[in-house]
Length: 100
Image (tube, rainbow, N blue to C red; front, top):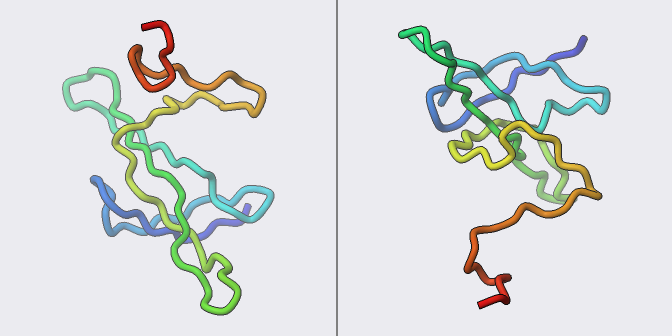
């Protein structure tokens, strides 16, 4: 399996570089989840990092590489999102609420 050294930004992993296994397309996964065990024996805390472009080339704007950015508010909660799925419901009274 092929891996690539990928930097992490923000959160507890800030400044670290870890080898991340690449997928069949040659890219690292879109999200990287790191379970951190609780010292008191409780459920582990999961750190979530999202893949973002490291930089773009000047001439064509191609992506130079990837890095992971800390995402403290993981909205997906590890669930898959399919294109045919219904959109997530927002809080009541939001801009789409027409009942009131």
